Every structure is written in C-alpha cells, then in structure tokens.
Length: 92
Image (cartoon, rainbow, N blue to C red):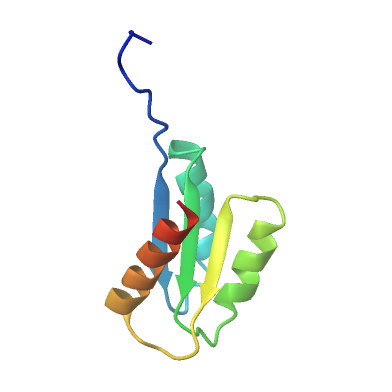
C-alpha cells in the first residue's frame, strides 16, 4: 500500500428477490458461489407458498454468508429488491 492512500475493503452483496422458486433457488445460489465465492447473498422471499424459504434455510446450514428475509405478504419484485438493499446497507 502506498503512503498516503487508504486501502478499502470491497464487499459484494447479491440480492435475490424471489417468489415460488423452491425448484431453482439452491442451484442459483450454487452458481453464484462458483463465480463470486466471497459474496454475501440476501434472499428476499416474497411469502412463497412453495417452500422457497425452507430450501434457502437448508442451504444456509452449509453457507454462513446467506441471509434470508421472509416477507409477510407478496409485495412484488421491486419492493423486495429495496428491502434487500436496505438489509445490505444495515449489515454494512
């Protein structure tokens, strides 16, 4: 590091808004891990009735860098994305 410069830690957080993705979410997370292994992942489940959140909880047992937000009602992709961004900012 050169004198007078500030080294900044760069962190990547990937936000996944989802609804009824139980069949796909584990593979998506696995694929993300292949390309961005150190990223934090925030999954925002929009109250999926198909068990998406349960699948994510299973993946979380093997991967400590995943955070799950389960919303009370179905609010849509846009508000789920915003909620994920707020969570990412809160976590720093």
